[in-house]
Length: 96
Image (cartoon, rainbow, N blue to C red; front, side):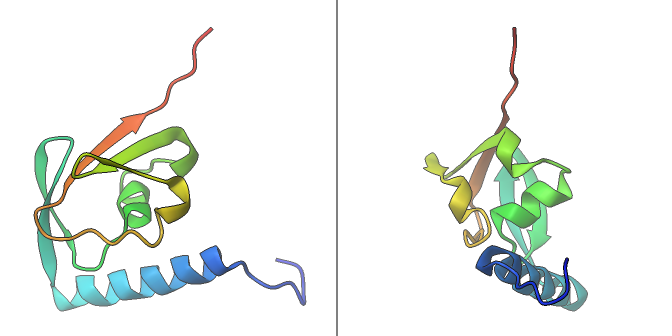
C-alpha cells in the first residue's frame, strides 16, 4: 500500500474478522456446520469470507447459500456463520 493511503472498510472488517477468528481458534471454540452436505467444525465467529479463504476459493468465482438463502458477495465478510448452518458453495465456471 502507498504511504498515506487508507484502507477500505472491507479491508478493516476483514482484518477484524481475522483477528476474531484467530482468537476463537486459539481458544478452541468451534461450531458445527454443513458445507455442501458435509459436516464441518469451524472456529466460532467465522464468516463466509473466512470459510472461502480456508478453501482457497476466490469470492468473485463462487455463489454461496446459507440455509437455502443466497448471500450477496458484499455480505461475505459480515455474514457470520452460526451453529447448524447449511452452507452451499457453488463454483462458477465459464465456458466457450
